[in-house]
Length: 395
Image 1 (cartoon, helix red, strand yellow):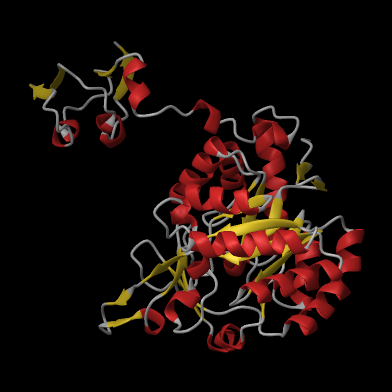
Image 2 (cartoon, helix red, strand yellow):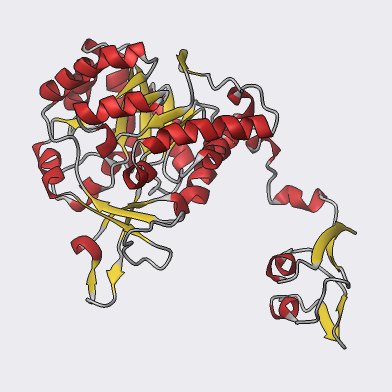
């Protein structure tokens, strides 16, 4: 079995799987289940001094949607969309930290690392909440600059509204990092022009790591009722978003090199490996847990070990960033060997499906025989051929 231990901000995690800050980490009973599932750590549900954001959680609504964006009834597909309206931790900070302290002993006995999570509406509030976490013995604190819900509430500047304001984000991180010794992890919103520049801003201000990323804000329609699902705009995520998240993990890993926890788009152990190969050290999970329950954590850890064994990795740390390091720019693609499509005549049926999708007019079929000339090597035909009769070769 592979060694699943990773070091993140000078702390050893027994494995890279982390329960994200959300409903599964929202109360004492839930946290005990998280710890007992075997995860390497958890991020507590975001505590806040904003009464509006606490009260919003009493109106929580969630929907799982299928590939056609219809509400799931019983069976939830792998590429589901998770659509929801919620808020932050309903308990006031002091009350919430009492429960965190209660679970702390169990977490320590199981080698499960606790990461705090905070959100405020002014600089002093951010500092005060970070100090409260530190006083409770929490040595890593995630600042939630990504929560999508405050953007829909007038007069509540927290969450993604902070994550979209570089000046304010930098001011908050600088103030908090000056006030506490706890390591700061900044959870960023994907809804900015350039996540890399926002990551650079918070790192320059004193952050030790970033979480990439929180959810988007979306809008989905029930066509039969001619109305939006769950009344309007909502946070939107799920496994379908993985390519978008990995893009930002790759670029931050490449351009800044700051430690990264990946979030938004993880479904199973295969996704965990992809997140880590792109540059994440820890991988946070939430939406699939809300669909499948805490047992999914245990399954993912087991499956992660199996995947690493399958590909001969002795240590999970060895996979961090290996795919990112092999990526090349668009400009460098011209240096690659030329490719072209070739047809296996024994498999080809002359159906002309490849012709339909060749927008370079390189394929012709005569008497059920395929002729390919001046191929660009784009690869579409290899994907659409129903017989698997086409492959790419170097010219």
